[in-house]
Amino acid sequence: MEASTTPKSPRAEKGVKGTSDKRSDQDFIFGKLIGEGSFSSVYLAKDIHNDQEYAVKVCIKNHIRKEKKVEHIIREKDVMNILNGKQNPKAPFFVKLSYAFQSREYLYFVMTYCKNGELLNLIQKVGNFDKECSRFYAAEITRALEHLHSLNIIHRDLKPENILLDENMHIKITDFGCAKILTKEEVEKVNDGRERKSSFVGTAQYVSPELLESKTCGKASDLWALGCILYQMVSGLPPFRSKSEYFIYQKILKLEYEFPEGFYEDAKDVVQKLLVIKPEERLGASDSEGYPSIRAHKLFVDLDLDSLHEMTPPKIAPHLAPTEDEIQWDKVNQPGLNSLELVLELGLDLKGDKSKAENAKPSASEAPKKPGKKNIADVSTEDYILRLAEQEKENKWHRFTEGNLILKQGLMDKRKGLFPRRRMFLLTTGPHLYYVDPVNMVLKGQIPWSHSISTEAKNFKTFFVHTPHRTYYLEEPNCHALDWCKAIEEVKKHYYPDTTT
Image (cartoon, rainbow, N blue to C red; front, top):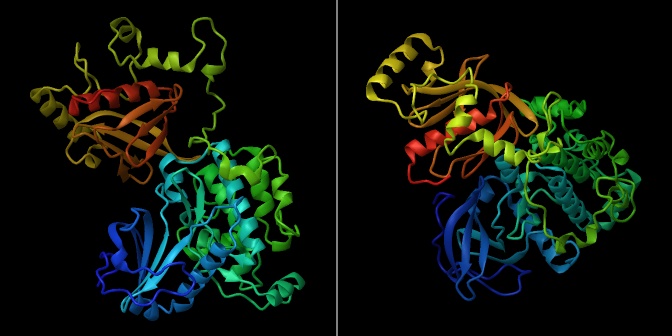
């Protein structure tokens, strides 16, 4: 049976020690697949007795033995049982193991279902987090590590994929297969620097230097990961990146990373104090109980880490770094034009105000339109054929359009968080919105269209394109963001006429 197939096994055998009640797969209705690994699959499931939803991790025994992951599975169960038995009401930031049982072929872990998915997916969807979001979630991770480390447990694979978000948008840390439970003797050896060397575990972008070099592993390894995660929340990408794991490791060992423009100072200071080669010199590493030195940092100065679980998390919003030559219109005090929203509403002209449209200067990158044409996508058959033939002959970008007519084109910066990438954007019939690497002349992708696509202008240079699964953050260097918003909305109106904007 493949790992992605919903399990249909015989009545489960005796429940695994450490669970409160016996259960079997017959006590659950299995729904959609919500996660998958090399030897396990995670399903959304419902308890038939109380309709409670759970995430059920189904592990194939033969695959576990083949991949030599038996110890991995046992460790994961042991850590979750410890967390179940020693819960801290001020740090409820861990996935709970509700039941564990097995059948002849499978092991089942029935755990907390976190309906808002992985932190990584959220970062990728919005690009990056603003200051309030970044510091709130960094604070929750810090509070979680305080509790985890008080139990002498090191996660060792802390990363955005292993941080889930529950229905209230609070974090739940998961995946303890790489964790280490320190004995009293091991804690003393770590404190004295006498612990035996550690084997390598973790994920390339977030692994600490001491783990890479198989040196003594302590709680400071998780603090390194916290620094990487905070960097990624603010900037959109992890600090150490390369085309291969080998080169990522080399960058980590050399502490080779940089901050992009717009990375705010408080978060930068925390990252710099966590991403330190010597683990004993990291912020919080010398604290005897909890992490008061991290709590006292100015990034968290007005946050009570013991009441985070009672707070409403801030609304998810990206961090937009202003450019030097860009006017901040919402901060300019001009009678009658005191808000950016009003300026954008007038500039967009989505309602077809002729007086404003006649005075507006067309973008140089916009394809010429026939006089009186109200919608950029309204092209007659004859005009379409003529323009497409001319495009095929004279426009070097035609080969990326799959035979579609270019309605608007122009160079823009496509941002992944704070990292810009210059791309040629091609708005075409179909509809399609392609983007091309203009240096290497390679098609990098396209923004997916649907009836729910929408634009949002933040100023004359910056705008968003919202799709169901991702928000694209774009910057038009010549301040024609409004023209692009208008063109995209017109194409949407043409192909999805029943959709209101």
